Structures are given as C-alpha cells and as structure tokens.
Image 1: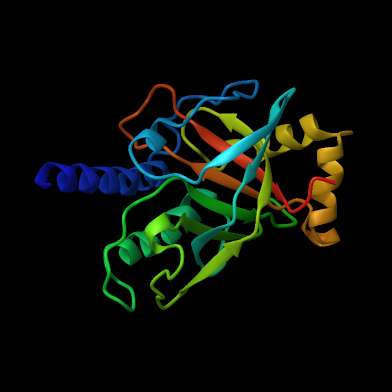
Image 2: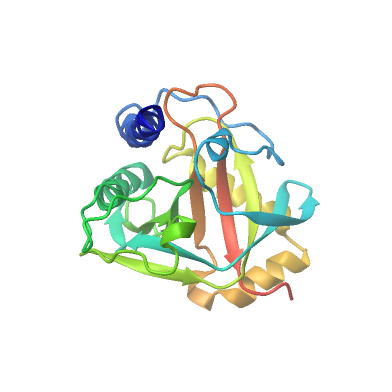
Length: 232
C-alpha cells in the first residue's frame, strides 16, 4: 500500500513538473515530427487512468475516435497569449483540487491526459481563451466534488479527430499541428461533421492533450483533438 501511494505521488508530481518545465524551458524540446504519428498508446495511460475510446477510422494524417460519455473538471476560461502559461495556471488549480482543495476535502487520483481547449484570438499578439480540464476518475464520475473556480463538464458520447505529435508542447508548435490536422481533414465527411458541431464563430476551436512527464524525453505523445457530436 505504501509503495502504491508513493508511486501515485511521484506520478502527480511528475505531471506538475512537466507543465512547469514546459513553461520555463519551452525552447528545450524535441522537435515535433513533420508528419502525424498515429496509433501510439500514451505510456502514461499504462500507469494512470485515461478515458477509453474506440477507433472508428485511421486516415491520412488523422484518427477518428469515439469517447463514451464522461465527466471532466474544468477551469473557467483563462485569457492569455501563451498556451504554455495558461495550461500551467489551470493545471495548478486542478492539482490543488485533486489534493483535497474541494468541498469534500477529498483527495482524487490523478488521471491523464490534461487537456486544454483553445479558442484562438484574431491576431498574433491578442489573448486567446484557454480552458484546462482534468478527466474525473470512474469512481468519482457520478458525483465529482465541487470546488470554487472549477466546474464540471459532462460530455455525451463525443467524437474526436486526432493528430499525434512528439516533443514538448510549445506556443509555436500547437498552431502548426492544429493547422496540419485541419488540412488532413479537408474534403472529408469528418470536416463537415466538425463544422456542423461548432458555431460559425468557433470553427477554429481545438483541444491540446498532454500525457507525458518531463522525465520522458523519448517517445513523447501529445495530441490535437477536434471534437464533434455526430458522425454525419
């Protein structure tokens, strides 16, 4: 029991350090691959709980997944010009939450990935809006402890177009990877489904999923998600 507790504490601290590392040393990263990587199961999900999904299609530069209904604990929108800084800010709120800073004083197991929904700004020097979320473990899904400044998002069955990329997430590579995913989907029924699921003003919204600790320099797995509600 003691060994298991120490392992979970190490995992939690690793994820905290990962985001701090990215914020402070963003230039020191493994370059993202020039083409999408598909079908790599994130190593973190062999150690901690991650949401399950079914793969519907593997295309040229993308993967289509189906996620079952689930609950996510989310921050309020964070205004910033940097996804690295915004994710760090949001994750520290969520880390305090799982350490017991919630209405029930309950400690909650760490899960993966940490996701950041990005609503891009209209210009390169304008603030974007970021919402950082934590997948609620199965044992807490029915009744996640409430907490000030956080809210529960309840997903219905949700579909995602996914692009994987390596290295550390930085302010420079996320936009490139999101654009590459959008380009790979162009002309497909999935692009139409994504467009139908978003308001006209929010078609550029995407989500960044981060899995790894900073101590894993090889075989890093990050993902861009474009979420949609229906297959048609």
